[in-house]
Image (cartoon, rainbow, N blue to C red):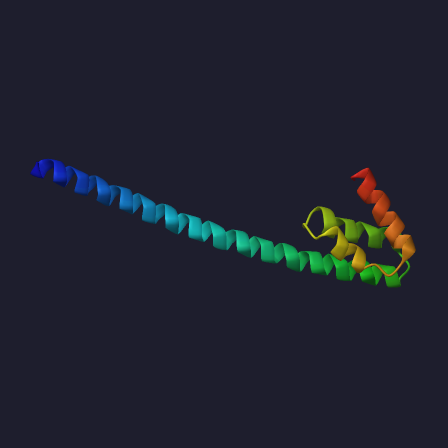
Length: 102
């Protein structure tokens, strides 16, 4: 009976160590994902600022490209991206890009 208790205790310790290691790995993965997400948001904001700069220079096509990149590849919401647009011309170009999916 004592050997059975010892086996269960050893198995319990092994399972606990595996659990703690998995928990540690998951925590570092979660931190990494949060870090990546933060960088993606920052990059999306820079893309939107760049789009506004090109809009001021009347480069509407390029402005729409930057906005579409922020929307499609950096997971910015459509509502947020379109709220940053100051021109119907850019909105039309961006909307056509969204419909085409390119």
